[in-house]
Length: 149
Image (cartoon, rainbow, N blue to C red; front, side):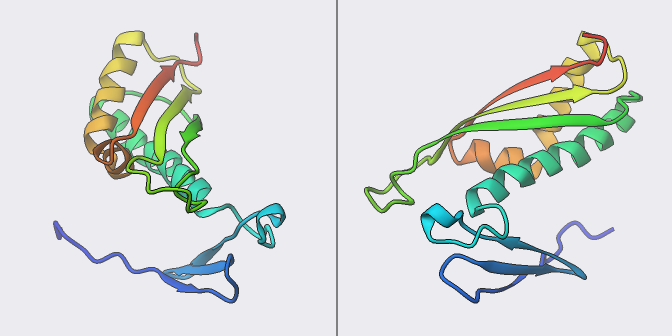
């Protein structure tokens, strides 16, 4: 297996706010809401970044659970971000726009608290999106909850 690969994404941008993204044979639209001059055809770029964190937590969470021998079932994941908008409004440069993310992960199967702590630690080590946010200075407060809680 290759240890390094090129990720390829193409974007066509027919307006100042709309980006039509193609990845492999699928795609998505990234846009701004109407009140900010967009057409609201998709999530904003910042919303998309949070969505990517949720998707990555799901994929890496299941891989880590399998490596630990845990049956976590499906995950319900939410992310709430304290976002400093001064940068995107061009008011001033902001070093850490995504200041804090509250990430809540709920397993559908019962998992012990001890196993949830182990799982969360493994996901933190291997989730590239969580690493990207943390290395940029974002604080991620994770709460892992079992269906039995």
